[in-house]
Length: 236
Image (tube, helix red, strand yellow):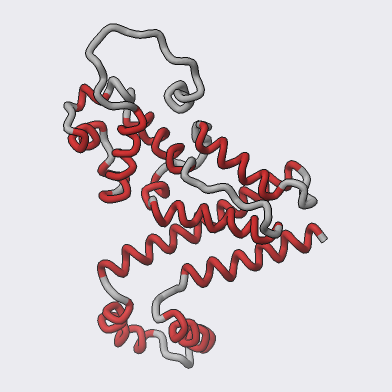
């Protein structure tokens, strides 16, 4: 917690010892770069130290553990959010919140591997929560409804981003056309249109539009529109 709020706390009294050549911010930025490039599983004290040209034991003078480093990384990423313009309509501000959350995960897919429950509140996540609340303050929601509105926007955007990340990773291994070339002949035999009429009809329509098993981006916009319609109806 002290590391998270290090810039808000008074400086620690000087301690004798070797002069540090880096700072915690540099360590965290380096760890985020590794996670973005190589994935969550590649984050360790050893890999971050190697990236910085340090011995692993040296890195412990900056962060006490991998778990603490992950907490710092999540908070640093949350602090990247830009303020939402108050000149936008209430609907546009709520839409911006969902888009920011989704973009954050698409930019940093490793966030999906971090347990989301009871994450330590640091300055980055706290400031983001404050900005999000400011975006929906005074639009007619109670305090509890404000918190729940942020929760459903976050959960919807996160779930959709998970599908988008999975689609990107799957396409890197095999395109949809390749998949159908391999499995299509068998599926045509075991799933004839007369036995699965609705599946065949709807699946064919969706497949022609998506040219893929799904359309995460289109589903996000469709779902977000329906969510915002519901919130606005509640306000009305």
